[in-house]
Length: 326
Image (tube, rainbow, N blue to C red; front, side, top):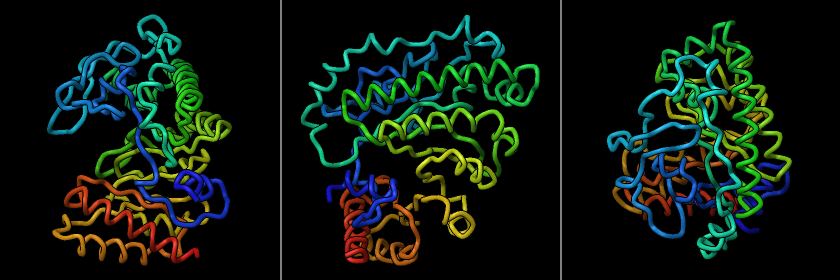
């Protein structure tokens, strides 16, 4: 099986040959999409200097600036005083103005792959509300009855746009793995209660996931923070997986919900591996820990001690899976 075929089989209930790993997909986020430049997350065939070229105008009239210490961009200034203004003050970009066929042609070699072609929707719902209003105003208006209808209408419009965006990536690039980016918590707790989350965000995320699945696109949730209490809501959307952060107790969550959901395990060494042998030993240990669990593995190249160690970890995880399911 190819990595793409295996990943789809894993998430779609088919017979797979190994538990998917990070190198089973490539990231494609071309510079023609202003949001990727604004967020300093361009990934394409030709090199792009995100650190020096990242930032600037993104979707919906939001300007961003690249922050080196964070390794990403932050929004500069809210464009709304309150969410009720979004229809008048928040421009919705026209995806038909992008030359999708030219992007595909320029990246043809890169896109000629047997791996999943992955991309990101920046940003989901609460993060988008923050960029439009400021954190304090977004957190307050999310729980105020006076703003509920406005927020629901905004989130409906965002969902429409995000679904259309995914459809373009599917049509022109054969992309089949999308990450929707929406942080929901701090290092200590969620930003909002499970009840608010379920009422205000989950219906829109569920519709996004459902429409992506109709297109044959796998959906991963990127959401940082200590959000364990929100995981039942997340599972209810039908989303495929969630890497999360190490502050969340995946072992406990798998014990509670592992029969309902395919968690991504963070296969990052606690300290950078000094040698290939150390990296390989770590990979075998973490694979064996989760051997009998229906999980996949997500690894950050930055936290492994170098690209060579990162690739060694991925190779061992894949080979251990092939031996297990042979």
